[in-house]
Length: 419
Image (cartoon, rainbow, N blue to C red; front, side, top):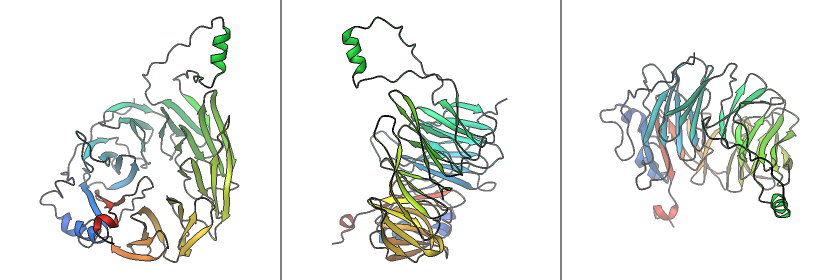
C-alpha cells in the first residue's frame, strides 16, 4: 500500500520580511550578529535583506537537509521528510510577499533526502520508494506514486511530464497531470489539394501522445539528477555520455554527446547552451543545433589545470569555476578563454551584486569582484553554515542547519547614492 502523504504540522513560528524575526526568539542575537543576515551589515555591504524566515521544522529532532531554488519559489527539505515552500517572487497586488511561507507538507520515510524539483505547476519530492507531486501554489497533493527501485537522483518536472530515475539505467516518464484529457485522433479522410498543402506547411501539429508510463534507457548509470532542457530532458551518465531528449513536431529526438569521461558535477544549462566539466579537467560549451532532429555539438572546449570543485556559475558573459586548491577562475562564455584567476579557495555558492560569493576554507563567507577577481571582503557566517547554492537568480541565500533562511538582494550603486 502506498504510504499516505500527510500534512506537515508547523511547529515553529514563521517570520516574514514585513514582520521580522519571531518574537522572543533567542536565535536573533545568536545567528544574526556579525553576519550578512543582519539588515544593517547587509546594507553596508550593498545589499537589502529582502526577507528572513524560520522554516517550520521541529528543530529539536531534525535539521535542514536540502534547499532547491527555482523561479519564484524556494523549497526546503528537512531530515524527517518535511517540505516547506517559500515565495521568492516579486510582490504583486493580491499575491504573497517575498519570504512568505506558502505551505508545508511531509513525506516521511527514512531513506536519503534527494533534491526536490520545481516545475511550472508541481513540486516533486521523492523518498524511499514514494514520489509525491504537490501543487506548486497550494501544496495540495496532486498525486503520489509508489515506485520500486528509485535511484539516488531525484525526479524532474519538464514539459508537462515527470521523469523519475529508476535503478541504475532507466528513467520512467509519467504525465504531470495523469487525469488530463487525451483527445482521440481524427479518422483519416480523403485529402484534397488544399488539405495536403496545409499538412505540408510549417504549421504542423504534434501527434497526440499516450499518457501511459514510458521507460527510457539512459545509456549508462546516472551520476546526477537530470534537468529540464528545451521542454525535454538532459542527463549525464557516469561514463561521460551527455543525452538530450527533446520534443519536436515529428516526435521525440534523442541526441547524444560523448564527453570521453565522467562529468565533474551537474551540467549547467544557460541560454540554451550546456556547460560541463569533466573529472580530467576538460571544460566545454555544448550547443544544441537548431535543425530538424536537433543535435549536440561543441561550441568550444578548453583544458583546466585540475578537476573543477563544485558547481559552475554564469553571470553575464563570464563563467566561474572553482579549481579546489588552485583557487577560483573566470572564463568567457563565448570563447572559454581565461579572464582572471584568484588564489582564494572555496566553494562558490552564488554570483550576486557584481561579486562571486563562496564559503572559503577558513569558514568565512568571502566575495570576489566578478569583473577582476579582486578579493573584496570576508564576513562571519555565524550560525548560517548551511551552504545554499543558488544558480537560479541573483540573490544571496543564507541558511542555518536549524532552518533559518535569509534572502539578500543586491542594491545598485545609484540606489545606495554612490557615484
